[in-house]
Every structure is written in structure tokens, then in C-alpha cells.
Amino acid sequence: MSQPNLNQLEKLASQIRRDIVRMVHACQSGHPGGSLGCADYFVALYFHILKRNPGFSMDGTGEDIFFLSNGHISPVWYATLARAGYFDEKELATFRQLNSRLQGHPATHEGLPGIRVASGSLGQGLSVAIGAAQAKKLNNDNSLVYVLMGDGEQQEGQVWEAAMYAPHHKVDNLIATIDYNGQQIDGPVKDIMDLRDLKAKWEAFGWEVLEFNGNNMKEVVAGLERAKTFTGRGKPVVNLMRTEMGYGVDFMMHSHKWHGVAPNDEQLEKALAQLEETLGDY
Image 1 (tube, one colour):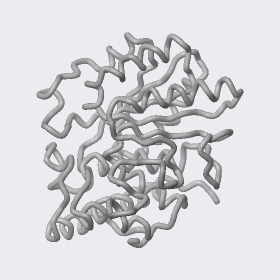
Image 2 (spheres, rainbow, N blue to C red; image 1 turned 180 degrees about the horizontal axis):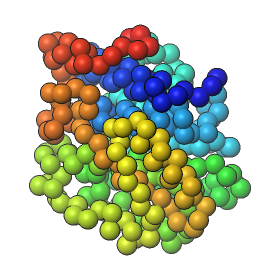
Image 3 (cartoon, rainbow, N blue to C red; image 1 turned 45 degrees about the vertical axis):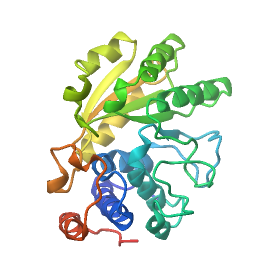
């Protein structure tokens, strides 16, 4: 299968945004805001960046692996995994339903392909990713480990323990990304607990810090490609990815309101009218 071009990646992102709002609407539960904002990142990652095997193995030997730390944005991950062929797209209709493999926060005991660790208890994903990256080094596996965190999640102490650990141990096969949308469940991040100069903080901890616009597919692809060029140099890499919560749906943007609120029937129709159907709805 040939690699999608930029236009095809953008069309994939549009379809996945449609999947997200439909999934959350159907069960009247979930987190559409951050999911919509990160759609371009997930599409770029799974359809352009990751060196991944056609099948799925928990250990991920010989392939790049990804961990989602801010597990509440599971809708975008599930939709991406389904569109990438990890499981049937029709299963997206079971999101947050009883006995579904697509729980509100990703879990492992249902055996959903693509999920290697339960997440959603914020602050833990970076530690897991560092462990996986070190395991790859011990096994002489030259593939990379990726992890996505939220910006509100940077208020967790465990993040900074991990941030101190990785440079000390030269975990340079790790590319972390922070969804820097400035919003969290209770309001703007700067009002809840101001992160101040996040770039300076990560640099002070010994990381290579890069920045890009997470809602421009061309910049996302270029930003992630650039991050790969800094691996193997003795330092871990972190991307500060600027996004807009609710991106693609005008009434969901510019506020924390849609962090964890499901659209009603009328709002769903308004949202779908703004998102092009490019692959066919599940």
C-alpha cells in the first residue's frame, strides 16, 4: 500500500473528525474537544510516520509503538486505529457501550488491537513510554517510541519525575508530544495552574524541544519528521504541538466547554455539516 499524500491525509482527518462526533453523540458521553484537536496528529502518525507491522503484537518488536497518556481522547485513537485497519470500522458504533472493547478510556483486557497499556489516569504515559524505549535499547531494537500527553497533564508530578529520568539515562529513541491547546476540563490551563514557559522547562530538564502547529497537516508531518532527525543523539525529544480544542467544528472551538460534553442531535448535524465525509461513515 502506497503512503497517502498530503491531500489524502487531510481527507482522512476530516473523516476521523466525523467519526469522533458521531461516536460521542451516539452514547452521549465522551471527550470530543481534545479528540478533534488531535485528529491531524493521529492521522500523520499512523498513516505517514510510524514504522508499523500489518498485524499487532503487544511487545511491538521491530516496529515503532505509540502510547496515549491523556486517555480521555480515546475517540480519536479508536477512529484512527479502525481506519488504519486494526479492527472493523463498524465497531466504532459500540463506543462506551456495555461489553464494548472501546471503553471510555483505553484498556487492555478486552484485547483491542493497537492498545498496549490502559491509560487515562493522567501523568503516567510518559513513564510507560520511557520504559518501552529502554526495553527497545536493551533488545537492540532500533525502532522508536511515541507518546502523547495533554497540557493540563503537565500539572502532574509524575510527568516531571519522568522528564528528569529520560535525559539522565539518554533515552534518545523517544518522541513525546504535548497537545498544547491551553484548555483543561475546569477551564483555561493558565487559570487552573499556569504552566508558564513550558519550552524553557523541558529544555532545562535536558530535552530537545521542538514546536509546530498541530492543526495544519503539512506542519504536523514536517514537525514529526523533524523530530525523528533528533533521535539517537543522546537526548529525548518533546514536541510542543499547538492545537485548538474542538478544531473543525466552529461552536466547539475557543473554549474548554467541549472537553467532555457530547453534542445533542441538532449540534451533531451542525458539526457534520462542517466536516467533509471522505471515506464513508461507519
